[in-house]
Amino acid sequence: MTETSYRIDGATGAWEVVIGLEVHAQVTSQAKLFSGAATAFGAEPNTQVSLVDAAMPGMLPVPNRECIRQAVRTGMAIDAQINRWSRFDRKNYFYADLPQGYQISQLYHPLVGEGHVDVAPDEKQPDGIKRIGVERIHVEQDAGKLMHDQHPTRSYVDLNRSGVALMEIVSRPDMRSPAEAGAYLRKLRSLLRYVGSCDGNMEEGSMRADVNVSVRRPGGELGTRTETKNVNSVRFVMAAIEHEARRQVDLIEGGGRVEQETRLFDPDRGVTRSMRSKEDAHDYRYFPDPDLLPLELDEAFLADCRASLPELPDAKRRRYEAAGVTPYNAGVLTAEVETARWFDALLAAGAPAGPASNWVTGELFGALNRSGKGIEESPVSPAQAAELLALVVDGTLSGSLAKQVFELMLETGEGAVALVEARGLKQTSDTGAIEAVIADVLAKNPGQLEQYRAGKQALFGFFVGQTMKAMGGKANPAVVNELLRTALG
Ligand code: ADP
Ligand code: MG
Image 1: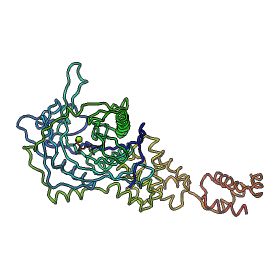
Image 2: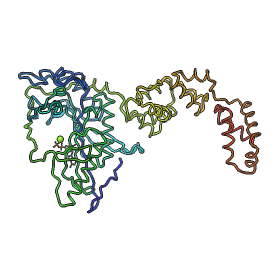
Image 3: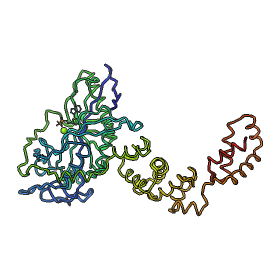
Image 4: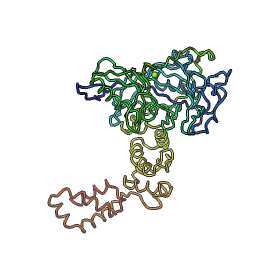
């Protein structure tokens, strides 16, 4: 386990920051938590609202099996305890985007208990793992959305989101730097996307974080925390922590006290502002929802959830490393599920793991960056890439020829073998041809030859370069080196 060295320099000495994150993740499911209404993003306001979501009198909620399944699968992915018995509670409050007058959530008996997420806060050190505890995951309903920008004097409400299933993933206060919090969020997002239980799309609000921050003397007692609500990007979470920790240190050192309060992050100014203090903290009068039976999960359901889990990023990373991929590349290839899927397809097509990983993270990523495409829209398929890599492995293509062939594949859409045949791009180990070119090179460069013979060893590279150039890059570099050594005596 790695320990962070992140410290805040105060006027009176060093301070440590303590961070706990509550992440709201929208469950991927066709229908809402307790109704059959659709959940698609971007629909016209109030077109995905059932009578349950609009809280018409007498409507009864019915749990959606798929939403529960997704939350259980997520719990399993973070090695958490799955509670066979859980229960829904009402969290009562009045707000215009909440027609029920309460949110159905799980306070006392959450679906998922203790688990953990292993993160690598420094991507240059993929083996520097820190374990972040997760206290619980519970499921709850989302609220609707108020729209204040549609009319000069009126506000409107859109209930499309009302009743959509959320997972609230509550971490332990285990993070000690903005980098660790960023790494935790990225890892969590990656896990959710591998599992397929949330699309992790922070811009569309499918994942947002409440950021709890306190400061203390290194290793001392926990300080009073503030909670910055609804931060919707990894970068903003890190910026909010940085600002909030500094603010708390300045406040304490100036003789003040941190108030436990809810704050908001202003991304334009990079600061947090007070939203409401503990004095007006809500009393939600939680009580068990009388309309819903407790959830009881049977063995068959749990077994089905477990069997449906894909290979997860940590296991995948270990598998790649065992097959000869460097730890750094293995980290890069498993960070996003799309990349890992593509790489797995490349391996399945017969490509050797080590060279394939270098090629994907170098050549393919370069080409994708230049064209602004994601790997799922890659202009070459895993099978086509495997064909190219096979030509490198069997010595038909040198590294530089493989680059040329890849460029041609991108231009023409043709396969590597066909291109090599049609354009005569094979690497040659034909000693006779190479010897003839070497003789020519030596004859044309008598000055360099004299200096080399007089002891200027560095000129060897010059002759290699000239020979390769004269052969249009197609000579096998190892053979050129060997023949040059003989020729130069
Ligand atoms: P609540 O129920 O009031 O939201 P919890 O005790 O459940 O409070 O904690 C909510 C979040 O705050 C958790 O993610 C937890 O890790 C974090 N947290 C708790 N105490 C601290 C602290 N002193 N500093 C930073 N984060 C904290
Ligand atoms: Mg909370």
